[in-house]
Length: 619
Image (cartoon, rainbow, N blue to C red; front, side):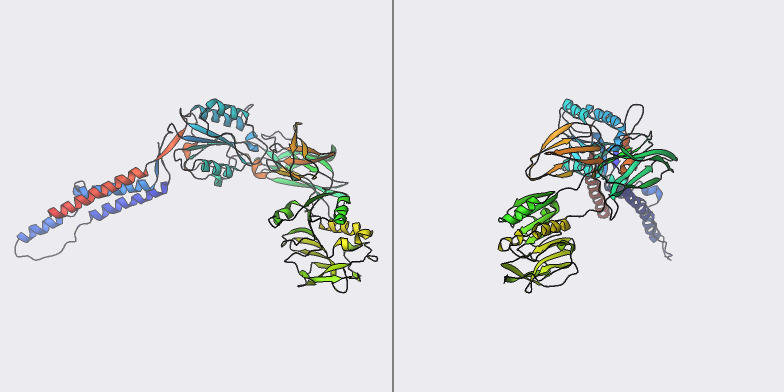
């Protein structure tokens, strides 16, 4: 079978009738008065040289020129011969394991079951020396084997695969598969999928063969589920749940929301065809615990009929301290409740932007820090470059003579504070977010800055060169400063992530293990390094429980993806109808024919030139 990679190029064949039209032109008649018929015979011979239809087939030069145009036009269309792959050709099998593959398709089967049957046929049809690599396409593309020639090993890997509850990203999977076959023109990629994605996923490569499984299906889904705290209220929160009807008929869907077994909502939703409804449910009380939203509907995909959220108490403040050693500062930070302290030595090679992202507050104590990126910082006895204030020397025995109205100074009594030596700072440019906390006649001793993603508290003296650590105001000032520096969210208090994504778990530096209990009830122990754990085994939706020491916390994994829940195929094969043929033909390869056609066209043009020059010579 011959395929055309660029069928639009066949329009170049319109040059053939143009050539024929040019050769059909006759010399224009001229009226001439002659004295003898001898000259008439020469004129008649000249007229006969015009090509009429009766002489068209006798003109070898024209035939060669037309054949050259035909061959070049076909070569531009990129013809390829579809044949069985050679013995050494490699095959990549990409299996869709996204949530939509769990959709029912027939009695007692799913789309994934049908895809596995297709995969088995492809494995059985591999050439004797052919190799295959198996990979899956979910939220991430994962290699399940290398290029393997052992058919039994391939079948064992396929038998262990299961679809997850995650939204698929087939574009990334196909890009990875094509990169694995780079430089192997006879390689073949089989993508076994239900086609529940947009057409732009198709990379347009002739090496990719789509095998679409599944029939049209009915589905109603929860596409959003969130808890959020009401503004300026600690005892009122809202539940937001969106339910969408993907069928072409109205439905009535019983729905419920519960928090730790306590019913928050129970009712029915009337949904029009291809429409959605969002519930905004205000409740009084603390939003703590494990929440579940459900719809009771008999559709073809059950994975999106429930959604989960876990609401934990406030996370401990994660503080990173760079210091050469400061007994007072370390003591107050370790004594504050709900605070995880990590101490490190500063190095110019540190990536401060990354550290600011993974820690709530970064503290520089007496160390010349770098230019600060967006984040939350506490500077003690040091000034960083790029701030609206700068270091201008030292001040001896500064007296605290004033304090600002900031909430950071609430109930902070500085009457008995004595400072031996402090930094002198000058404000280079006033900015609206710069607050004076307390000061002496010579300099500002403490400042707060909120500017373009940067939140900072500055304390301009060495704690060891003052009696500030001995005052009752000392722990209060640091407690209120750190609370002000604590990152604020967007009001949503639920902890849930999309199925298949990675969840970052912060662990106190003294802990080295985390016990993770999956929604299925299985438990596993994970080793922790560097005070954090990246957990990515989240293919299944549900509530995950993890224990760090004596503390148990939860997070939820949910689908809630409107595009993944649209389970009917949105991909259309277009011109590539051969991709929907049964898989029983074994591995195949595309052999490009255009190089051979190009050589043939050059030969025909050379022959035409020889014929033309020969006819000129004989004339």
